[in-house]
Length: 133
Image (cartoon, rainbow, N blue to C red; front, side, top):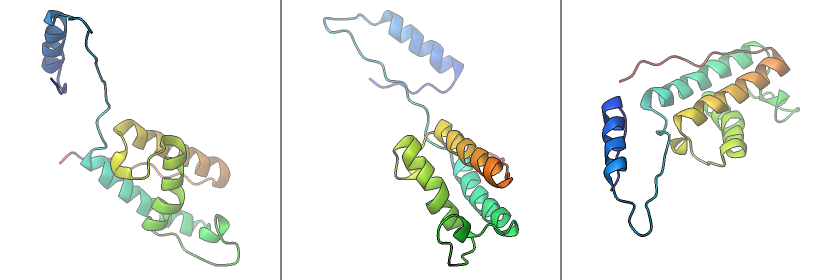
């Protein structure tokens, strides 16, 4: 049996089920998972990539400052995702795709990247607030 708990009523129903269920010979297992990233979070990530690319380019911090010193390469949303976000994501979460991220991991990766850019380059771009839907 699998139960998805999203509301307080769901939680109370799950608690009732848990307390009424006999342990049986081997007991039973529980698994808790954070929900995957939300569609608004996904839109926010991609808007953040665009905003950060613009901020880095405006500050004169093109990709050569990070990657290839001899080539002037402006940032794009795709290069932010590939060269900055994804590298932190793999190192921190050991996940290759943003589709695998939990809501919490999106926030944690953003915090790591924002802290680094703020401390090293005095660049801060707030993560966009996205309305659900």
